[in-house]
Image 1 (cartoon, rainbow, N blue to C red):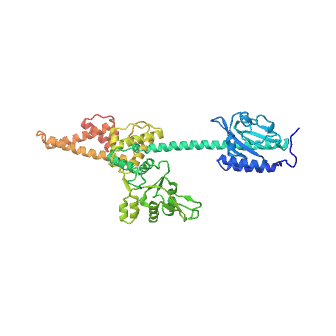
Image 2: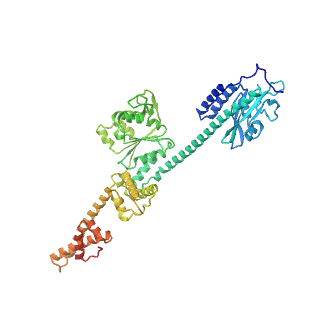
Image 3: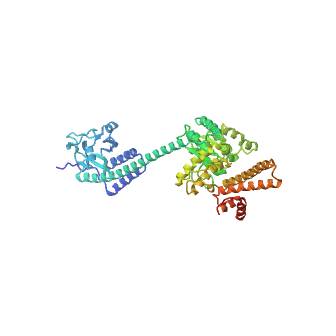
Length: 544
C-alpha cells in the first residue's frame, strides 16, 4: 500500500515556470563567485525553501583521502555536519558516489542502508514517512559528490518530479565545480609561475650577478648592499646608459620588499596633469579624458618600491607634491579630496647635476635633500674598461640565444677597438652594438663591418693616427741612422727614408688585405696604378 500524506499536508508541487525561476536563481549564484562554499550554502537554502525539505546536504569526494565530506547543509547543526563524513561506498550517500546511480527512497524508516549518522531523521514507527533522495554530481563522466534531501513523502509522482528537478540542479552544480577547479588549477599554475619568475628576477639582480669587477663598481656594490635592507630613499647619479635602473632593481630585489611590486616611472616622458595622474591617479571627470577612476603608480607600488627615473625633469608643482609624499607618505588623486596613505620606498635617478639645478632655482632645495639621503654614483663605461670583456661575453651569449646565432670569435685587434672606444652611451650603447653585430653575423667571426658606423669611424681614425705616428717614428729613426753613416750623401739619406717609409706602409696594407693590391690601394687611399708602380719600383711581391 502506497504511503501518502493527506491532501492538506501535501507539499505544493512546482510548475515549469517556478522551476525555471529557481534554476535561474541558482545559476546566477554559482556564476557570481568562485567561493563555492558560500555559493553552495545559498543554493542549498533555495532548494530547502522551494522543495519544502527538512534537511539537505551537499557532499564532495576528497580524492586525496577517498572520503566524502559535507560542503554545505541546511537544517543541520555544525556538530551534525561534522558527523556527516563517509567512506566511499558507506551508507546510501557513499553508495551513490561509489556507483554513480541515484537512490530514491520513499520511506527512509524502511531502508536498512540508511545510517542516520547525523540524526537527521526521527525513525520511530509513530512518525510520518520521510522520503530521502540522493543524486550523484558528475564531472566529465566521473562522480564527484552527491546532493541529498529529505522531505515528507507527498506522493510517488511528486517524488519522481523532485528527482528530475534535483538531476537538473546537480548538472548545474557539476559544471560549477568543474569550472571552479579549472580556474583554481590555472590560478595555482599562475601563482607557481609568478613565484618562479620572481625567483628568476631576484637571482638575476643579486649583486654578485651584476657584471662589474672594477674598483668603481665594487664601491657601488658596497653602498647598495648596505642600503638595500633599509627604507632609506636612494638617489642614483650617472650618465645615461650606466645601468641606474638595474641598480634600482638590485636594491629592491635584495630588500625585504622583494615580493612586492617594483614600479618604474619615467618622469621625462610625461608632463603636467598627465604625469601627475600617472604618479598619483585621478577620479573620473577630473580633467579631459578622465573617463574612469584610475590608481596612480604610488598606489600601485604600495608595500614595494617606486623608481622615479629622470627626476630632474619634474615640474615645480609636482616637486611640491613629491616632497609631501616623501615626508608624509600620503597624497590625493587628481580631482579628489580623499587622502591616500602608502608605504612606498622611493629610488630616484638622474643624469643631471641636481645641485647645479638647485643653484639655478630649477629644482627645489628641500626636495633635493629629501631625495639625497643616500646617493650612489654609477661610473661611465670609459672609467671601468676592465669590465668591457665580461660585458661583451654576456651580451654575446644573450643575443646569440635570442637570435639563434653563433658569433663567438673576437680577434685581439677587434677587442682592442671595443676597449678603446669611449662609449658615450655607456653600457646601453655597448649592448646595442653587440646586438647589432649578432643580428648581422653569418658565422662565428666578429668582424669590423658588424660594428656600428660610429665605432668603425673611431677605428679608422685610430689607424690613421697610428699610421702617422709610425711614419714619423720610422722617419726619425732612419734619419738618425743615416746621419751617422758618413758614406751616404744627403740626397741618398732622403731617398732611403722615403723608400723605407713607403715599403713599410705598402707591406702593412698588403698584409692586412691578404696580398690583394686592389684592396690594399683602397685601404691606403691611393690609385691602383700608383700602387702597382710603387710595388714594381720597390720590388714588393703582391697578388694582381
